[in-house]
Length: 441
Image (tube, rainbow, N blue to C red; front, side):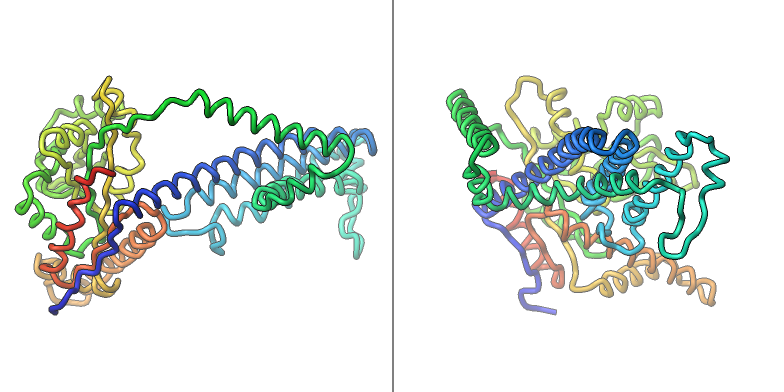
């Protein structure tokens, strides 16, 4: 098909900088919410237990502490679930999400802990406690836990996540803080004093700040997308058009033609001992163990030093990688690598990421079908061969779906190219690649 079939989601430099700043600010706010939520939970747990002890005794205080602990457990699971959004294709609200199921079972776990605590401290011993547990319609199990302990535990459990929501509302509504400060008496005075102290501390820190010198950017151009979208063809054209874009050297323990998720960069054979040393010192930004042509496992990785050296020698390190490899690259601690490999240099890696796709998942599957049949996979006749091909295509469909969900939710890609026409898509990629040389990068 002709026409302008490469539809780009290009961002101009100013928009990209603003978007990056917003992402960084949101992540900082999110980390602060997690940290403050756990602090609030600790304060509520200790303070609430003290009040429960003063009003209702040790059993209620213990129940409140156990309830608060269960609430903290719920919060930690929720934090972990939210942290995974955009990486595995799931959400915290998925019906069969394991972490969600465990969160929903937390109250049952709390009741079990209360029962064990009651049984272990029962005056007549465990047997007498067990004999007193019986079923009554309406109240259900009677004698399992005394009511004050249950009530205190439920209050502790509910208050922990509730405190996070209240803090979020107060933070989102500045007027609420003003209302608190307007309360007469010591509480309002304390709120005013806290605000004044925060303002003074902010002014003091601002006065000591020194102008921040911008580090030199070392551009890394990542091109990724599902298998069968034609990204390697586009990258080959980019390299031919602009020699400043060069792929880094990968390391392998045996000579293999193609590594998982990697482009056409040179393969350097190293000993297994040298590879293990690179891996042990966390010098590999990417590491895999694929199978070689004879069925043996091969270590295959990308040294961080190779990426940095390629940027310095050529101008831009070009990476043609599949989505799982792109994710590994973006999650690697490049700051530590630069400290070790470029000591004293004021430099930082600047990633420019392009997502190459096609118009639908079905197109991805059909392109892979044609490629597999051309290479001989599924060429043999018979139901067994057809079944094997369909199973492989089903796996490709699942992986492509997960890859596209990650690309959409991760926020890591600056440009998107829909490769319906190779000439138009190639021109779009070369245009996007020039952003690697933008002074605002």
